[in-house]
Image (cartoon, rainbow, N blue to C red; front, side):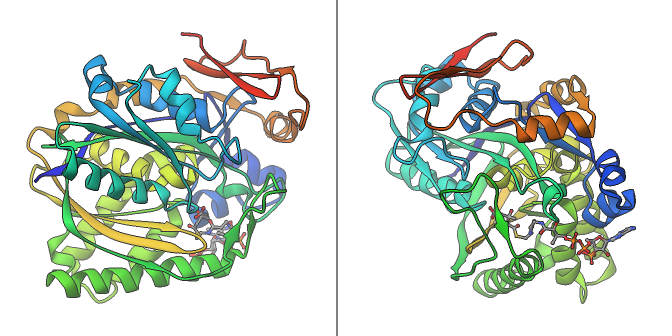
Length: 389
Ligand code: HMG
């Protein structure tokens, strides 16, 4: 059975900071951030956005009433969960008005879990061919002010629908995956910011990619020639470029040019949104599909998913005829254009704003947030959300 991505969209909060401004404030040459790291703008989440609202906003932008009636499984991939027990998926199940006879869970493995979600969704569709699965990948990435990781922060969510006879990307059966215990990046329960061994995490990522690409090629008898594009988890866009450059070192010029120019297009949205952890690989997919002038039906795309800790997977998809008619390009372009630039001081103030911890009641100001779904505060220890548009 042909199973894959039937619809896909993303959402970023309405605030961002220019990375050049951040570089100047931190006393760093702007080119280090714009070229060395490869990031231009960094999305900033106000207190009225959390992983739940970002996901609801992304999903609402792609779902029709017909999709909603067919969905019977919601998989919420995140490492910015809002509760130790209750899954974020039950909130969006309610906010989106999904049918009651639906399974709804949260999945975690750092930036990798949306891929676990996609693969679980494929299995579900194989057993229940007439249903659809909603996968959302939603995160707010925080390392802390004045840290080396600060420039690799961001906020946003990707939502996609997995179905049989998909309209966008048919996922091929073979995938290769790997787990290796490593403390390259983690966030203990007591910390609002991530801990990271930056250089080690970069090596770990590249080694996973090269190993999995070799394994995939061995298993399928394929080589770089068989890929029309290679996509990466992009914590920052230079990370994917470093891995891609290593893999094409020995390739011929034609393969190098095709894969490097595809990569250039696939990083466009990531460079102006930042690291959205679980959604980053899929944001890169949207970027490629919506901005490439050369992709065509039948093209094979390789996708590398990586989550610190560490789990990685390499898999492929083939573009479906007419895929370009099912994208949401105008919506994304307008959303990104309407965003408001913050000064570095305003960004720092939002970053340091602490919501009450352990208080049973508080409200959050939502008046300046234009997003359809917002977090309004806590009542009797219960999180409150509303649709305001
Ligand atoms: P750093 O020490 O600030 O940067 O940390 P650097 O000194 O390594 O410089 C970065 C690049 O800028 C270098 O290029 C410099 O040469 C260049 P590279 O060697 O990489 O090609 N540079 C310049 N370029 C042009 N003009 C200039 C200039 N100056 C310097 N003037 C680091 C960088 C990424 C380590 C840090 O930001 C960090 O720790 N980030 C967080 C960790 C991370 O993103 N790791 C990625 C792999 S792990 C992963 O992907 C999983 C993750 O998403 C989490 C999850 O799974 O949940 C993180």
